[in-house]
Amino acid sequence: MVYLFLAEGFEDMEAVVPFDLMKRAGIDVKTVGIGGKTVKSAHGLAVTADISENEADLGKAEAFVFPGGWPGAKNLKNSKIVNDAITFALHNDIIIGAICASPGYVLSGTGALEGKRYTCFPGFEAGEGIYTAGKLEIDGKLVTASGPVFAEDFALALVSEIKGSLDGIEEFSE
Image (cartoon, rainbow, N blue to C red; front, side, top):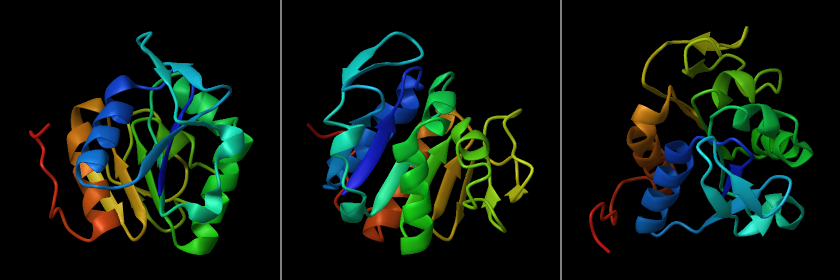
């Protein structure tokens, strides 16, 4: 199970592209609404999440994914379940995926970046970890990308890390 967290102000592409490609790869993905099941993106797209934050069972997760966007990243950072998920991931060797503002903002101060290479949207660098300014970084169980233009690269990296390969992904099928 992969939990993809959605908070008010999330970046559309950074949530929808990973969700779509993980589903196409046969991965069980659930969107988690922070603050309610209906969440609006940074561009006003209203999405009804699969579950609310109170329904998430962290013990069933093999990965947690945090889209960026503003104020989406700020709203993720202020969420208890998000902080619990990050702590749980670190203690249980679970994949953390974060893109855009989320690597440097949401993960900052949690221990997730300690000694790790990461990237994020310029201006959201954390004062920890090894910021590379690359488009995509994979360091152990941490997958980060710098912004919406790299949402597909981010999604494919998540699929590969979760499944161990890209076998079975059909990017352009129904």
